[in-house]
Image (cartoon, rainbow, N blue to C red; front, side, top):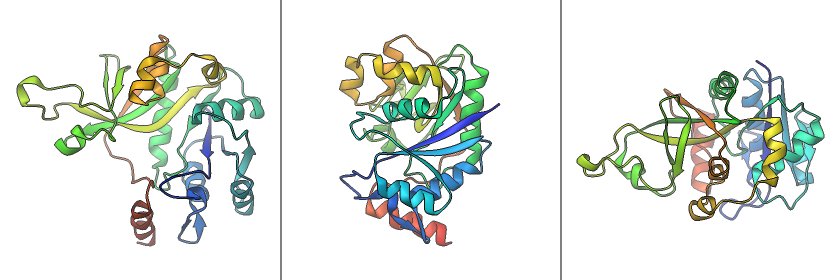
Length: 245
């Protein structure tokens, strides 16, 4: 199994300005993410950015970076441009690792890529883990999903799904979505041409566009939760402590 990791990185962030360049133990966060991804089985790790400062930081630490357009409406659109620049074949696998996951587990990246390889009828794969906390189940910032018996996604939602009627809404076999994706390069090329779906607009979840157009997403159920990501200054402080040990 061969795959390429692409890490989209933008400087614009309302909650944490210049987030990819945030210092974590003496390294920019984007470099930390790339180094973790390089511990996976990826053939190549590439950062796709619209900021020269990010590209410069990557070059200083031996991380390959591509300059992409600044007007992409989503991370998937940026990945599609990166696929073109890299000249990847349509059947090549591309794993999208978020640029704010400096503690991403390399094994989880491998598992996501392997899940895509094992399900040739799917254009994408992603990751989920068991959700047991009622507060997280009710939290609209925690994305939930449900699958069919073959492990393919049926729906993603910010609402608590599946709703356990006889359990007063407590989570029961609920799954929390992890924002890690594997794509077939040919589908990434096609993705920007797909019309935005009404469900995507309602939930503000880009992956619903894929399901809306009748494509399939395979889901790897991880036995472990991912390390904490970085969205806020408080998240950054927590990750700095964890890496400092």
